[in-house]
Every structure is written in C-alpha cells, then in structure tokens.
Amino acid sequence: MGDTPSFEIPPQLREMAEKNVEQARAAYGQFMDFLTQAMNTWQKGASTGGAAGFKAVQERAISFAKENAERSFNLASEIARAKDVQEVLTLQSRYAQTQMQLFAVQAQQLSWLMADAMREMQPKA
Image (tube, rainbow, N blue to C red; front, side, top):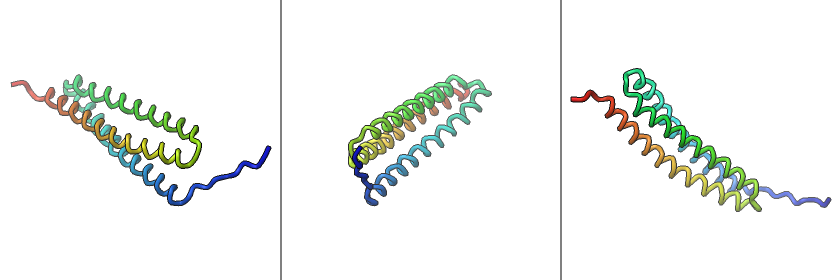
C-alpha cells in the first residue's frame, strides 16, 4: 500500500460550506417552528370539532418531513461518492439552495391548509 495523499480543505471553502449549512439550518428551524405551531393548533382544533382540516395539515407536514429527510440522505450518499472537495461543495451548495426554496414552498402550502382548516372551524351562518 502506498501513501495516500491527504487533502486539506482550504479555510475559505470550509467557511462557505459552514455558511450554507447554517442557512439551511435556519430555514429548517423556521419550517419546524411553523410545523410546531400548526400541530399545536391542530390539537386545539381537534377538541373543538374542526379536526378534519387540521388532519390535512398534519399529514402534509409529516409528508414534507419525510421528503426532506430523504433528500438529506441522498445528499449524504452523493457526498460520500464525491471525487474532490469542489464536488462536495457544489453538492452541498446546490442542496442548501434547493432546500431553502422548498421550505418556502412547503411553508406556503401549510399556511394555505391552515387557512382552510381555520375557515372550516368558523360557525356556519
């Protein structure tokens, strides 16, 4: 066995990767905060008879969580197969950008479902 040359990630690249991770983490934190609020409202709604609309919110939120987790696992697999540091950074950057866009879409869809559920709870005139 020969010596395998080690490579060191330059500080600028590490900083860029860390910044992208922090941005993705912040977006995910916002999504999870919204999800928590939605789940709390659903639980309150379930006790007042408006459970059907909030059940749709819950199901969609769970679906989003599963999709997001799957994308994370796919990223980890792609990174494990990356040939060099540049490829790792490209994969990670693309993932962070895509996830931030998806979190915005997901939050919007959940807000629409929440609005529908709230309308269902309003007394019929």
